[in-house]
Amino acid sequence: MKKLLIVLLCLLMLLPAGCKKKPDPVPGGDPEPAESDVQKQFNELQLKWFAEDLSEDYSNLHFSLVDPAKYGIKDVEVTLGEINYDLTDEDRQAIADLRNRNLELAKFKPEELTEDQQIMYECMKYYFNLQLALMETEKDYTFLFTPNSGVNNNVITVFTEFDFRSEQDVRDYITLLNDTGRYFDQAIEYTRRQAEEGIMQPDSTIDGVLEQCERFIADPDKNEVVRVFVGAMDGMNLAGKDEYIARVRKGVDEVMIPAYKRVIEFYEGLKGQATTSGALADY
Image (cartoon, rainbow, N blue to C red; front, side, top):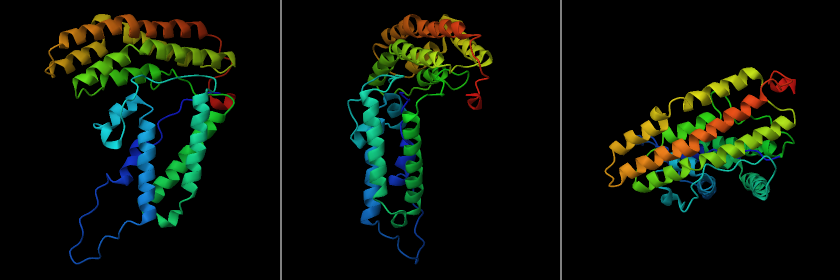
């Protein structure tokens, strides 16, 4: 079954590869040991995987890097991502890539790495195996919609915390906004497939999801996504910002809010059907 492939340790992978500030040398002390060829290769591998993973996820890329081109990242598709319940060809390739990463890691001897690299080595090995187990598991007990941290909340965070550095960011923002309908429909279908297999949330959790969604759509005229965007435009010197604001209002009214309404309708139809408390142990 298809599992959501999370960007793999991207920021953590970046830090040991050159962003961590080294302490100032002590006068008269021993010189800083030179980086060995093996350590250099390990850092290069981290940066390679870092760029590969961020290239697959526009939102994580935007929130992680100011200058993606510095890492050789360009022409990333502006979408919220894909959610499929069944394993796709892309997922099979992702599984193969994770296995290959484990093989590449196994070529390194931890004792030949720096202390930071040894920590990163263990983190990556653990996380790659965790992702493999998640993607290859027959059934998925991970729920996409939750009262506090599901896609229903995360999507709002993307749009209210978005950093506008250029006019292209504004255009990308509107593209993402108009993608919420497709993305939510995939999430609803994913959740429907889970429910068909008896994997569903209890009414108490459903009520929390419904409350969060209803709160977001309660007052379209004061919608927080529109309000935050208008505030951001006030701080930018753009000739066409009034048109951009109008396009965001239209996207919220015609795409985003209807998507949340579809989530509400779907979850109202699920109430009363759960046969467990929702705890993993019950399954």
